[in-house]
Amino acid sequence: MTISYTLEVANARFAGFSKLLLRWKGSIYKLLYKELIVFSTCYAILSLTYRLALTQDQRILFEKVALYCEKYTKLIPLTFVLGFYVTQVINRWWGQYTSIPLPDQLMCVVSSTVHGGDERGRLLRRTMIRYANLSSVLILRSVSVRVLKRFPTMEHIVEAGFMTHEERKKFESLSSDFNKYWIPCVWFTNLAAQARRDGRVRDDIALKLLIDELNKYRAKCSMLFHYDWISFPLVYTQVVTIAVYSFFASCLIGRQFLLTPIKPSEEPPLDMYVPIFTLLEFFFYFGWLKVAEQIINPFGEDDDDFETNRLIDRNLQVSLLSVDDMYQNLPLMEKDKYWNEQSALPPYTIATAADNLKPSFMGSTFDMRFDVDSEQTQQVAATPNLPRARTPMLSRFLSSASPAIGMKNLKGLGVRGHLVRFRGDGFPSPNSNTRYTDLDPDGRIDEEETTEDERESRASEPPTPKVATRAPRRLQASERQKKMEQPKTPNILITVDEPSEENIEGEQAEC
Image (cartoon, rainbow, N blue to C red; front, side, top):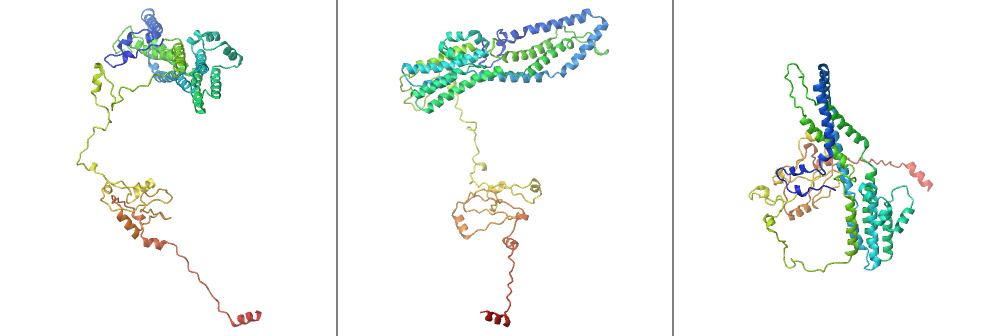
């Protein structure tokens, strides 16, 4: 049975987890005590052999081996390898839990879309939800040891009421080399289509909703099957296991208390007999490995494995109540207690009355106060967004002036500058009376020409804060320079030859 201690840790208090340390069922002591006894026994045997059975030369050799093991044991990256492994196993464990099929959403859809208060409608709803529960029983029987022990054969499933004898014959007549947990889902879809043809399902939208919820339910059954089929990579499990066992095998020798000092000038080391911190290290690392060993397959018979049999009982009972007894069985609608009140405030008990005295949370800046005379609270009109000039990074530092707008300009201390845009940038003008001029091919910016009509229209507009922008001198150009640089049309010389007397006489003769 799953061990739950949620109520005992509902409130954080001094030594709040201390009561949990005395539990035995589902505890780390129950998982680890055998390994801890074996490790302690091996350590004690080596220690007694070193102290009582070895000669002086053999002790020296043993001490050298112990120092060697202690030195190179630190090269095993046990924390990284074991920590990453346990993290991935816990993520997999939670994914398996969220993949357990629950019929709660499906039963609500069946109860609301499959109509009919007669015996035929009741039979449709109960049969459809029974098919859904049958599918989950078949998949849990394939992955859970507890469910398989409860339903070892298909005859047990028939006796339990999840399947009829006729359905069992249909089920076994379909030959397939793979798991056939999906067959009841197909029966469900065919029955839903038949209910649509009979008018029990009113429209196609309701039928689509029914099929969509069934597909979600079937997808969870499929995920459980794939979690059981695709295990955590065996290579990584072997690496972690070898790392942990080899680390503590070397600790059996390397963590021994030596009688001879390492250097002759040093004092004899402290002889504690019992390696307290080595045992704690064994408890932590081996306990970490045991946690991964327990939750890598939560469908077994460990103390903290999933209660799959209880889930089956709950799902069947709740789903049948939802689609049968609760169908169109509504309580009488009445006016609620706060019908004539503007705001509803449920009463408190004496134990919770203090909660009502606390002010409601209105936002983190709700109690923030400003200085009334501060310039930051003065309102200014919004300025149109200007397109950002994209210039090379080097030219930004080498240019004589920066086109950026300073804080002085936002306060209206500068002269209104000309608004420009680059050729090809499709930024619409925020002001219909403002013209943006294009850059000429040489990269220069033309000045804005203001006509008399524009001056009159600007005079009628509300004043806007003046924004001054300085353009680099090398980009400025006057109107005269622009006209001078325009290409001039070359003059065309037309030459007319004066006709001679001979040509005139020849033309007259031809006429």
